[in-house]
Length: 210
Length: 43
Image (cartoon, rainbow over all chains, first blue to last red; front, side, top):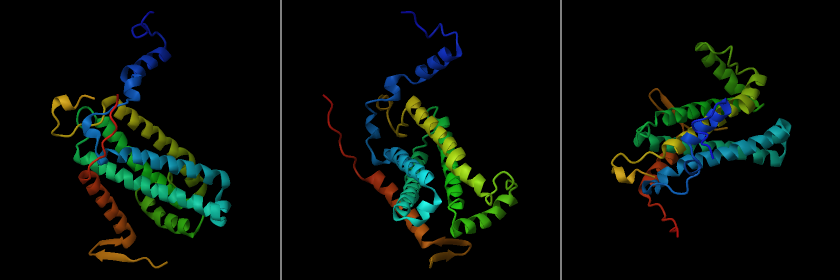
């Protein structure tokens, strides 16, 4: 069999070689992790992803059924609450994950991009949650959007991020920002797989090989 | 709705938000302090 690594002449071949060169299957889906990963502080990253799955799942049901349903029916209220509380847990887990990684200096060992994509995920999540508040189609949303418009206008972005435009906020919340957030989250997880979980600061060299 | 706030100089925070931050800090401390259960041995 000829090796395709040296001979890829098409962009699909080069992309495949680059992807599987950086992330061979045993690195992409490993069965074991280094001993230091056996700590509760390492659980919060995956707990954040689990909460995000609940956020997206409940959000899809809300999208299918619409505001009249989630404002007026008991099942709608329940799914609305699942969406809210999975967001609360998402942020809680993400903040504990952030604290843990900050105190581990998790950008060590060529992991700067992992740290930066995580930070961007956090900021994108704040924006996504905010657009969720202003598109609830209730008095709460009206109050938040009329308060927020002055802040956004004062920093000069009100024309592009118009919180009084329900259509824009709705599409930001259900299409644009989830795609951005989902994409950066996948990138973040792939970078964790590529570079491995950061070792403790005082770990010896032989302990850091996975 | 009757929301309770704590005010300290220029800082104002609702009790609910303060409780959430407290839970986060407690989770962080417990995650550091509590031992992690040992996994089953692979053959």
